[in-house]
Length: 483
Image (cartoon, rainbow, N blue to C red; front, top):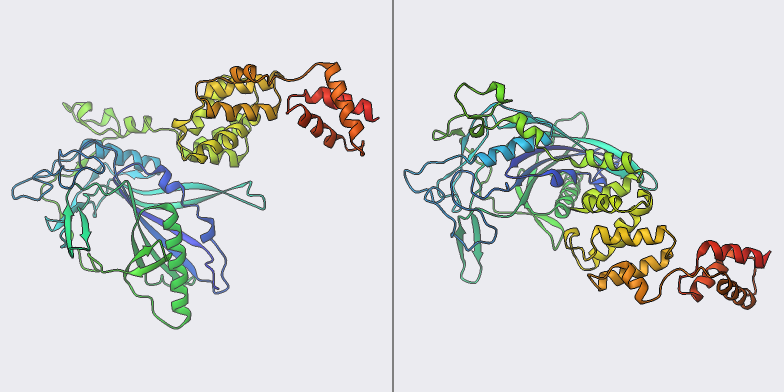
């Protein structure tokens, strides 16, 4: 089977929301494979992300996921004659923040355009977008993935960001197969993320191949599968002497294939034209550049937004590795789980245990418990101070490592009970009585034929004491009795 030598990613995205996580997962290593045919896959992504705002981009209608159909539709949303768009400043600020996070150039003047096509979910017959000069352009996303034999080597790659643009969402078509009819919901809240993948293949040095567009992919996993399948499909078509068609396709998650779809927009000319009802969108670099008399509170100021940027994933991962001495793969786990970095750092504040000893408790033990019940970090039944208290008890030698893990399980099953309470109630404290340990060790030595396997003997003592024996004392006693 042929493979693809490389993947070139040019991300053309529509900014309707924050997309740090969605873009950071483009490190799809299975797609970057070598091929004797020297065919190269070229992938361009249009990422539609919904802005986290309380009202819509061009109207005052509220935004609420899963609201009853057409319950949040203004006269403008319904395209009634004489209604005009009013730009939502919050959406502009979100687009600027997205552009800054993706290292884009922010255009101080951008324009809105009309994109014409005819479909039932677009009653105006056009969509307001930014085709000529969008709000942000020419960015770069540097992402990291783990490679090498042990997947411990951090490999950094770059993705070119073509542009960030604000765009009106279309309505949603609800197909009723029983009655053979389609209903339209103009609430315009179709979910937080949709991706259209433009895929083609060619040989290096030759012109780009004919592209297909795989539309409306709603998860990162399906995106990876759709791209991988479509590249292989196009390679097979060319190998058989066929021609790749310039068409729109859909990804079928059940068959894991892309299939041709009835193209609602087709390959038509969208007849772009300037939006006459919206003036140029002006943003200002800093307060000093504001025109005289313009209140800073009424303007979009880039510097102010830049200062409010949160710590970005790549920066956060580097900081975790440098500050706490943890492995790169641990930093990936922490950053990829929402809230886990904060949890980890809260535990560190309340314990003297080394970060490299704490990390396993957070990324393995705690995260394992969360995954078992499909819970988020914010839903954890064990708080950071509670875990820190347990780790302190182990660090000070009051309990062994194996007992600490038992107690953690008990804390999860009995929310509200502290580790110290459980240890006291179940008498799980470390056995440090020398005479008692001598007696147990002698019993183990006498009943075991091979007295030279020290670690095995230590394990048997721990089994005898249910993990409560002081490991340091046990080792000393056993060395004395077997020497």
